[in-house]
Length: 325
Image (cartoon, rainbow, N blue to C red; front, top):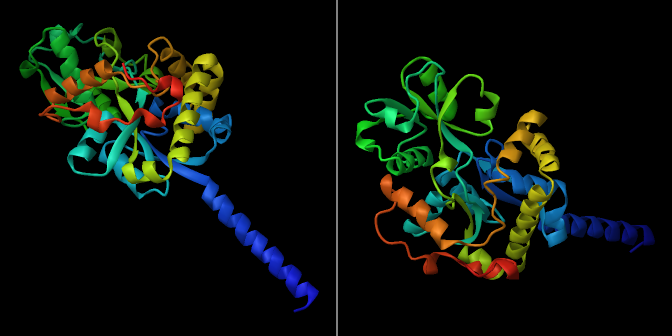
């Protein structure tokens, strides 16, 4: 074999090895409502600031979805099966016998959600919804759950409030503007961009206590075979959360870039979530988990008891976060 041929073979081998290593190091994970809600803010910050790499994993991109089972399916189909999903989706996946386990808490407030009406509407409070129509995004979805929880907290008979499935937040607002409903559910940052068009009937964070709204899940098989990578993902996200609280303005700039939002809108949306402490660094709080389950019972998504000891695995959290409340 000639020296030239040997050199070419070595170069080709090195390129193949480098490509294989690059492919092995690059990971893509799933996050519900990526690009449209604030669930994904810690991931955007962690990627932009190199916090995932510092933790020991290279997250290159996020697989987004409209939420629910779609995010779970995306997660299961990924080479790196980790995803942040609504807690309802996580519990549904486990009821269906899927091999998933909850490994960290994502978000823990409903501060981004509200109920609005038209400026000249006679609806001034939740008590005024008796006999009225309200647009929710979908039957038995989170928007209906929060509405029912708020009605219950305010002593309003939910049976006297007709819920209309709109198919989406913008669709519900269109129904509201055309007079098809008396109020509609809304979420940030959409609520900020349309603040001058509607009047807020209820800000759910002022009515409902903190509750776990999203969680990180993976498969038990992946957790068993890749504990270090899973720990790195959770640690990188936690670092992203800490970076948001340390510098909300910079986090807003990053979210604006990642989600293709107006910078001022993104910065205000992030800033609005600082006081209610929307993002958890990952630790479990069973009281906040239980509150969400009670809401899921109102929409029939949970019927039997929930044994958290069989569903949660805190062993992949940073040491300071492992003890659940």
